[in-house]
Length: 181
Image 1 (cartoon, helix red, strand yellow):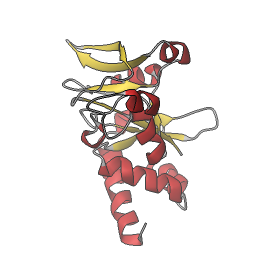
Image 2 (image 1 turned 30 degrees about the horizontal axis):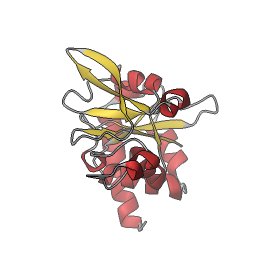
Image 3 (image 1 turned 180 degrees about the vertical axis):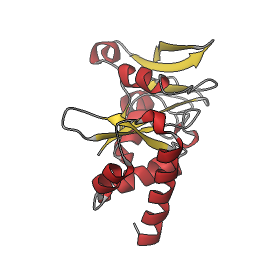
Image 4 (image 1 turned 90 degrees about the vertical axis):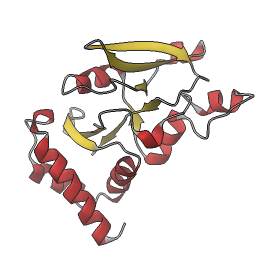
């Protein structure tokens, strides 16, 4: 990433960070900036999250190690990551109308992970997301082994978790990612 691109990305992230302080009350921009300094892979992932419509922002600490959690905070599921089935085996198993990508495959390319159900609900506690779209979320292996996958959305003022076949995909369903920095 060129210095000018990096600076533009950092300016965008800082403006979003300062506009939404309720998402990260115990985190300062100085802490974010120092964690991102020299973190090429993280900056590249954040740039790709931004480019695909994710509006990444810090939503607090990611783990006990103190890493920061950057999550897609776009009002709707990121536009550049919709129309995906859950994973590559499901995508490749489709005989007709195979989508161009899978949520897990695309997340791996971006260097991020899908939100868990708990993380998705925690994000929803900071605002209203996916009121017109839905987002795939990390699915437990026992559900995936039976051919299912989970997704979430917000309807009627409530956050819902649903299931669908892993091969399904919809124009209004994408995925939100998590990056630990």
